[in-house]
Length: 487
Ligand code: MN
Ligand code: MN
Image 1 (tube, rainbow, N blue to C red):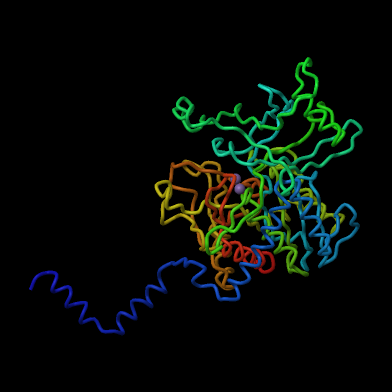
Image 2: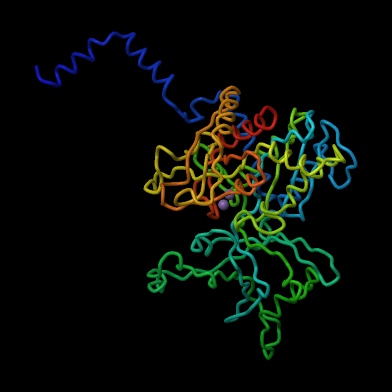
């Protein structure tokens, strides 16, 4: 009897109930993270498709941090939230919001317990990588008019030429009146674009390393081609554009210096895949987490603990500035809630309140991409379709710059999600030493609160067209609701 025959015999002789026992033992002992399309019941699948419609509509009207704040406040007001600055007292069940300089937002539903016992907090960021106009953007060259840009956040610069672009932002005129611009999104609007070189003459360009395929100073936005009708006049192409901006909006060139104008990919969020299982859109990092957080908070009524969502600006450039997560502005809102409930609260009670908060730092993770599998550890990466990813740490190299969530806190969240039948997965950002990244988690953790990163896996992160899964979006919404109401 050869070795192989012997082992065949052993398998054949194995009783049926023993193989069942093996399956049961495997189910009991081995961690498994199923694809949610397999395990979701039909009602959840339907709900996922209709929730995605709401999300796409929201994305189309909230492409920038300023637009997110505007649209979110409209939604919150329609759901009975009121402005914290006009609130003199707080009671359980009250719903408030605080606008952080038009680019950040805090919204809360006051809980039954006093806020000094801490709040349940979800934080997401609402800025996305893009191109900002330089202070002196307008110039003409070779009978064309262009706008100079400075990229914001981590982009692959080569992804931005030769696609339709839109212009969003705010300009303050000399009399102080604001002008909100949104050009390139409606079907009737013109779009802008950045030119790329034809392949016929691209030999030098294509030999550049890819970080310089398109250089920062080559991200020039084509904005016009008509001259001011005076052939003798120098600079008449630029003048024509300035004349148009003046006649249409009352602007002069100087107004652009103080403006915040962002160039983003033009166009609407779309279904992706012949089965429509995915969503493709610009700016899903991190609106794919911010939107379900906003929806989860809006659903709450009189939670046990005060529930808070914070929507941060400036995450993509390091969370600096007075609208970023490192700003005291956000913590100050929690202090304001405390003082409204307890006007004689002392500094120790403030500090305790911060320490008693528990937070989900809700930010996208990288979905495993089989085309570029070499950068990921397949056993420790998040996958599209397997639900919200709970991420213990981010950072780079030896976990540099991470807020490593405490095991106690992580395990409590897992127990809650398992008890409430909220599916989840885990992962880290790529292979060790393959790269890395950070989130807002550490800035809030620095105040003493418990924080863990979590979020929805996306493909093509930071590109003009990021991909998420509808089933992940929906179950993340349920996960946020569970965390806010029951953690
Ligand atoms: Mn992000
Ligand atoms: Mn990002």
